[in-house]
Image (cartoon, rainbow, N blue to C red):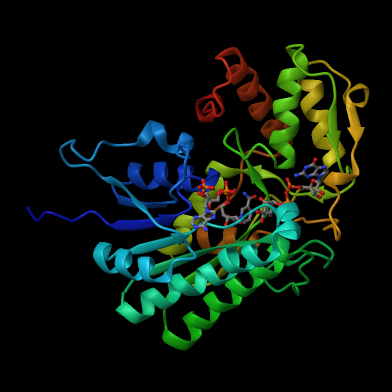
Length: 342
Ligand code: NDP
Ligand code: GDR
């Protein structure tokens, strides 16, 4: 019998929402996973603590390495050492509102970070497959439905930086024949979503209000329309893109539309409360330029990758509220995994 060696994958942004689900998925498929993490003065590995393996255990298959997308030479060293079969670039300054406060930093990490990785791959001559976490924010002001042929019109420093990364990924595919794909993912959420994104901000507040620990919730624009899907299903699409015969660009979405107001209503209703009694306006949550409506046409991903979403926004809101209630009962543990509750 011939022994097959495990595929090796690098995940940048492994400590984030998507990185943690992708790491679980790849470990489940028998990959050797290498996650790049940032040095921090406090622990930033909450989302992956449950899969952490002590390096002294026999045959570990998850390895963590300090790195930062602003440090190109470190990326060259790591890629050369690891010689991955697949690289998933999920790291980014990913908050749209924050990108208006830190536009240069966002450009450096969310934009130039990608060229640092691609150049490392090219310089070493690696035969690796590359996934770029592109975003529906690149469509910005272009009205829905949006698909792979829709013109881009980003509306934030984040969207502009992601557009640079999208095009440089395409350019390296065309110029050097690299197997490099863009997943153009629409908003996707989960109990592991960062606390300051709108869905999680709402579901955490609902849990706290229901428990009598909070009385009001300050929000910005409630009229924007989003196409919210479920993060564990979206990381499956990322993996399928890198198993496909040819590289390409794929929209991943649910093709459904809900306003922020709808998400408030769905979440508060789940615990029998009326959102209008608790939600107040604060202009600090407005953006200088807003993205009014994103609704993704994912028919190419369905046709070519066989991918379809099953969890839509109403169920998603319930999963997240239930998880936040459970987390509160357990004493504030930040991320209770709700995958089993689906
Ligand atoms: P998160 O914000 O949850 O995670 C971002 C990750 O990037 C974290 O691991 C973070 O590390 C890391 N990171 C940030 N800055 C740097 C840096 N300078 N060097 C190295 N790592 C860094 O994002 P998501 O998981 O939600 O999203 C994953 C990717 O997909 C991002 O690129 C995002 O822009 C993109 N995207 C997300 C969508 C969504 O709806 N979630 C939709 C479309 C695209 P740390 O934990 O230390 O902060
Ligand atoms: P988005 O997500 O900007 O779409 O980017 P976010 O959840 O931050 O905002 C969605 C919409 O809600 C409105 N909003 C508020 N948003 C936040 N964060 N806080 C509030 O209090 C609030 N009130 C109203 C926003 O104005 C916006 O219209 C996310 C990120 O994950 C990106 O990284 C990713 O690329 C895109 O989704 C697709």
